[in-house]
Length: 136
Image 1 (cartoon, rainbow, N blue to C red):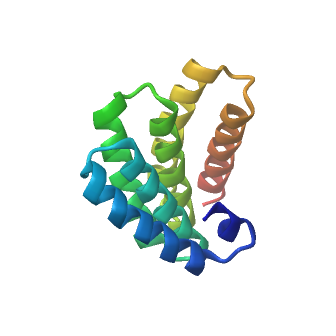
Image 2 (cartoon, rainbow, N blue to C red; image 1 turned 90 degrees about the vertical axis):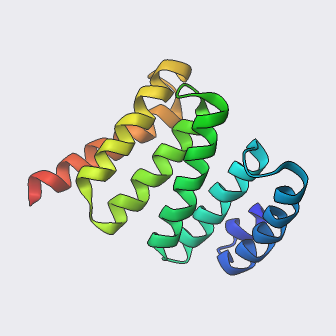
Image 3 (cartoon, helix red, strand yellow; image 1 turned 60 degrees about the horizontal axis):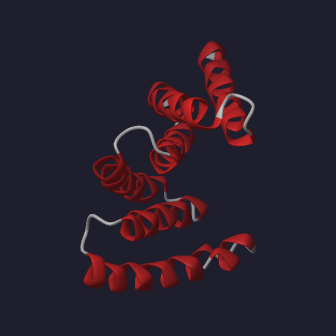
């Protein structure tokens, strides 16, 4: 599935991840890390297809499950916050994007440190959103 994303074939990725989700829901039920991961991947596929509202819907599902499973201090939660921030940024809602990016950054900084590449990327996303807000 990731192979399809890597070559930009988001429709094919979406097709396969939705099949995996269906199987995982039968095996694990709604509140399981595999299901949360599937929702995250579906959200990323919708993002790649430019359907930000669908991306947001699935990103929020992933976040909700991950928060229930892990609490606030887990990289899966940070990833979900970051993905949702990216969607809001592309929807033009910079306030919401900033809110979600800052949540992601706080978790990554605590768990991985400020020198970590992912933490630095989220920090750059925050700076970009702040620049957009200044320009308006």
